[in-house]
Image (cartoon, rainbow, N blue to C red; front, side, top):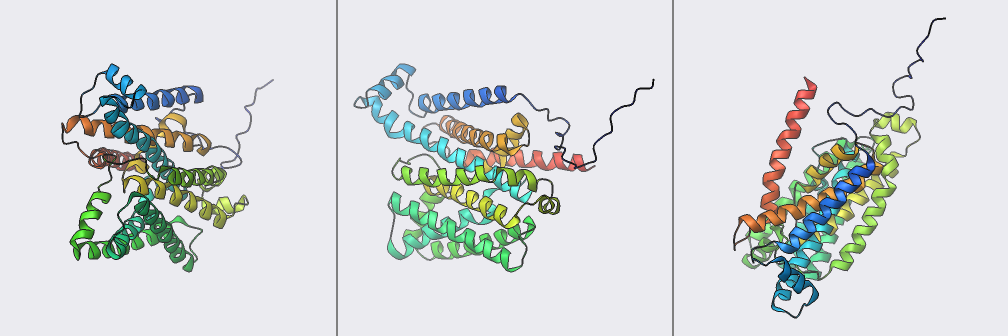
Length: 353
């Protein structure tokens, strides 16, 4: 009796998209273990390494006895940098994964929606008009500017009734970012004191930052993370295309609103604490996909973990290669991000051939 093979299911008929060649999925437990070990390793490195050379015993003594001389270095500098690096890196990595899922663009970065530009303009206006320079004042200014800029982007895209496609959102974000950047440049170039304050904030660094104002930022980040988790199913559906997503009953307006809210809150929390830091949101999701695949239920937490590892590792590298004058983490990330950007473009071009 002849043996017949079972019929193949029709393309797209409830079948998950297979992983791309060259990107084998690994076990979830192994990926979780690897990410956990990586986070612990960079945390230990951040506490142990720096421009001030301390032995491991001195670091432990400083952690246990803050009143000691080494305690001032450990608790005054390295602990805040470590905590901020983990928090901001996780926020930007998670925001980048949501951003790339919403736009279906592997080169998308949270800055496309004008979040960083809005935060920068709000900080400049606060310094220019009211001479606000405290950490808490800059945090709330940056958060408010980020939210208002995102609302402006969404409003511009909604006027064109283009929410079904991610392209109008990206175009509106690019236009608003250029406009806000021009206004920021105008203000800082007309007032020296504003330029001085803005130059310190905009560098995007963990050096010299404190934990003042971290709890409001943590609360904002938690709300953003909750929105990202609520957007998980929508992101998986949007990956099939907007038309098919609508056919499956997906509300595009709801998906866009929830995703945009997650991106805004997560990026605003990070930018408000350390200033604008680029390329984390671009690189973290790509590295996470190689570990856990493209399903957003695993990709989102993995991107947050990878973002924390990348940012903190780059900060440690900047401390070591700069000697007593450290290299800003933003500079190190620009070099790394440029290399990753070229690699992504080359891989995409080769796949298209």
